[in-house]
Length: 141
Image (cartoon, rainbow, N blue to C red; front, side, top):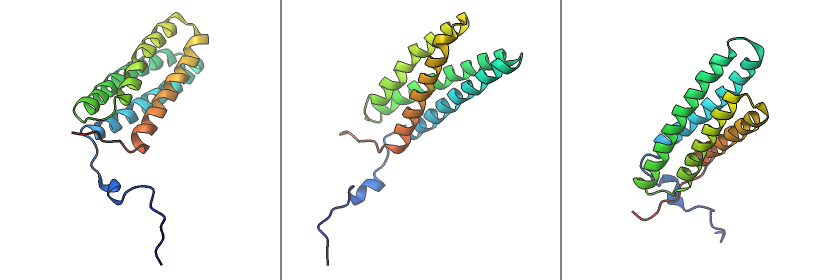
């Protein structure tokens, strides 16, 4: 007895190779999400002890490095791996927001700094989820 119901994905979809540099982008999205989470933890340290400011500043530098690596990886996946530009657009849009975050944090304006930090963490988490759980749609080589 055969069923006329087709599986949601073709059988060969599981074995389709990932675009070039997609593994690098997966690693950089995890690194970015981890550094953004570290920023949240050090924000708590900022409020509870004297050395918290230095920890929070150092974590901000780690976020910057992670974001630069993420933009480079997204660029490589787009140009060399022939994948969608959406990962690059999301990654690149986080760069000016992070710059604003540095300026606002240095000025001490917590009313903007905290919500913007939450938004950046959310964007980094959604980006990581998209990269890890969405099967990339390969374009023609």
